Amino acid sequence: MCYYGTWAARFPGVGKFTVNDVNTTLCTHLMYAFAGINEEGEMISLDPQLDLSDNGGQDNFRKFTALKLKNPKLKTILSVGGWNEGSRKYSKMAGNATLRANFIRTAMKVLLDCGFDGLDMDWEYPTARDTVYGAADVDHFTQLLTELKYTFEPYGLLLTAAVAAVKNSASVFYDIPAISKYLDYINIMTYDLHGSWDDVTGYNAALFRTKDEADTPLDSLFIGQAAIEFWISAGAPRNKILMGVPGAGITGPFSGENGTIGYNEFCDEQLKVKPWNVVYDNYAQVPYAYLGNDWVSYDNVRSIVAKTEYIKNQKLAGVMIWSIETDDFHPLCGKTKSPLLFSINCALGRI
Image (cartoon, rainbow, N blue to C red; front, side, top):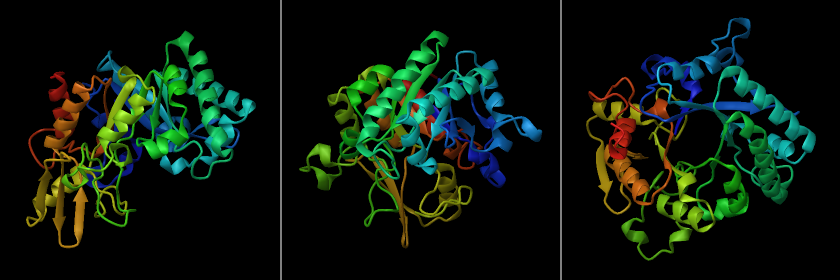
């Protein structure tokens, strides 16, 4: 299940990644990130010039779903929300029956008019950030998913959600047994577990404990294994769980976001600047690299394969990728296009 960050269509130079750059054979489900909502709870485009055909727009909603012409087995899903959308509007909408109805009605119209196969709810996060209803968001989110599922079923539309990973957040944000009944897939965001916001360095998406964490209780750690085991123990079925892996510090030249760099940006940086020291942590099963005062946590082919093997061993539904435009899609750093995504497919036995 592959998220496509559509803002990459506006990146400069070789960082630009459009719908035409999507490989339709390497994912079973493609997620268009993101749509949003307005104050009335209605679904809206966050970038009308990119998403829609009005006023000479690029019509990417329909171009995205038209990728199914290349691969009829492909499913295309519209993701609504994301970090930049905040929590307030979603809290307000989910807690009000009229606004929920507005959302469901307008979401259905977009999905059916544009040919999407489902909806992904990426509310970050119920009860948190700029929430309106606080703890009541938990039940409101469940009610929203209940009504969406009831509306979607006659049309065969999929309902998924991107959810917080670790226990101390997920146990507060969600009624896990309840939402698991209504979701077809649960996309656990087992990445951004540590980052530039922390006071000390930490792996963005470690799979297992580090050597120094050997005696630390698992459920207190921000690692992939802890997140997956918590969600299963809390009542999420293995066959609905997808474990997220990141596509990748220093600011990337394409994304331009402080403290964040895509794999494609970083592998190119390593080629240009030779002295980067790369270390693979055999305990955590992830690499890191350092040069002077810069320290980068990321995933490479080796760690991606290790995570995919873990997903297979745990009999989960599959792999969720955030996000395909940060893979080395040209490629800049080797002969294989999208080497991380290609490696996942190899490890899954799809190619």
